[in-house]
Length: 288
Image 1: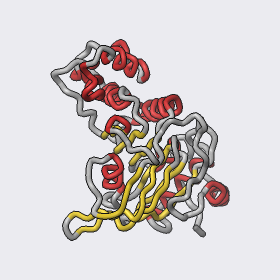
Image 2: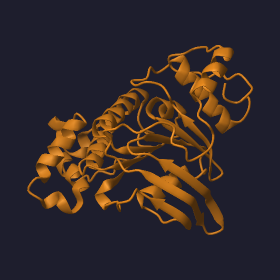
Image 3: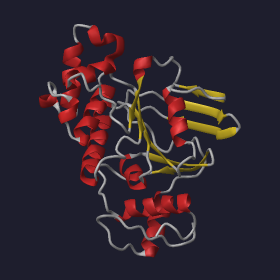
């Protein structure tokens, strides 16, 4: 990328154009899709993911046009792209909510069990007639009637900081609290891969930042593989080890976020990456 980018962030007013290009080039990964940008954490228990020549069409509309991708165990991957590019379709295929037209998706040598893969959506989708603890137990599926179901659900609520809300009705919760219940429901079965389909898109700015930190903490604690679809490029570079840019149903960019955690929001390095990715998404001269 040969032009300067100026990216407004909440904590950054102006970024020198020379610094932006220097930082962006320093932290961008080679563009070849499917390359694992950094080794997985040794203790990670997540699922590896391998996608080969994946295509998905809806009638005459070809949404995914040959995706090849490898995600190692325990990596946090964010997928960004303009509306209609195929990112949510890719997530649904990975989660088993839809079937590909052609190509393959595999999760290592062992077959993935249903409880190994969970999805968190933008809407909490809580049952209004069930209390918070019962809503979390739904995530256990057939095991929700087992002797340890209540204890597992209580532990999941503790993980998201809502243990004291277990007997509340969903209607009295705030938007952020409802999403934390939805996260606890996704975590309660001990998933090895957790797919996030823009789960924070409807939250206000401060609640969204708090939820981002919570997602990062539970991912670090539980070491599952995480795949996040988001429209928010700042969110992607703040959370992910790796950012995939989808264009016209293909992986156009595969970028490593090689910055230590916890990351400083508003830093020059994050601003540079965000500006560079926005430039890819919006075209030359539109990221600033």
